Image 1 (cartoon, helix red, strand yellow):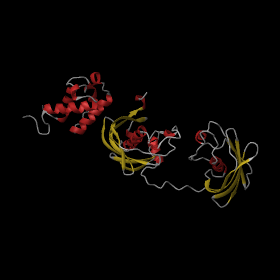
Image 2: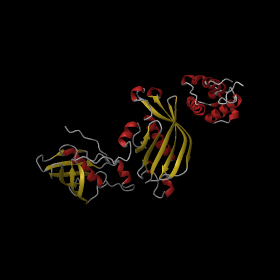
Image 3: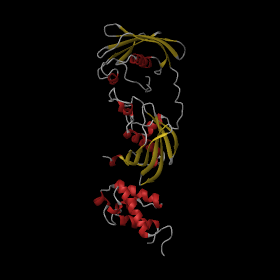
Image 4: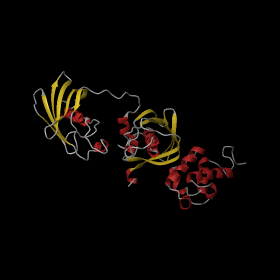
Length: 296
Length: 90
């Protein structure tokens, strides 16, 4: 059995897959029904849902991963992607892919996508590799997986991307990149003006608070000396001042300094920057770790 | 004179303390009498009490143990506790 390593994916791109020919060239099949409930259809397009063409490529990518030996194959070249007919809600995509080994770690794959009536909706020629991916560039001291390991928040409320600098018990510098795809922009009307895209203050406070939480996690006694099952709670903000905005495309940099730890409660102050512009500062953020049982 | 320079004038210190605590409680200093109750009269909660401890620690470098929190219910009690832990003789 192959152990699947999770990868980032826009959706579960097949409902089922199965192998065809098991001698080389390998043949793989996948099917996917386009459901009206597919979240991406909401934005593609708001008034006329069309299954995103790149999701046909996604189906092929996931099929290759599931079906080629090793379970790690991934797209490394798209020689040709031709989307010749749209897929609408209720359509069923069938993909047949033929994979020929090229060398020890790469495969050449050609695939055809058809709709239920047998008409071709897509043809693809791709190369995939079983080689490893390059690691993150390493610009930070904590990359996102480590941030995720330290914070209990998850999508869409995990608002720190990377830690740039960390001095345990003293200070932390983190970044949060704002994109137009943030859920907070989902309901803005088409005629929303530029200032409507200012990132919400509440989320900036949360992002700063999560940065403080990371600092606090690193300033605590070692895990074995702490009570188990504790949650870090954001308790108080005092003197939070907004002096600018962050917009899609901006990278917000938070700098938080730990002032005091009193009665298991951490006191910090901090600033948020976009480039050389300070957009917010806070005099005091208070957060405490409390055992789960105190929260019920 | 029983006061050292560090300890300062007891009356001034009490007034400074009144200001610090009033700020935490988000009230005017004159609303905070020597024995008005933080919780009953000023809607304080346990968080405010911890904030008061933190401010005292920061201002006077005096750590009042968390175990004394329940007794710190008014300005007089905080002043007494602070004086005791700071070794001030009023």
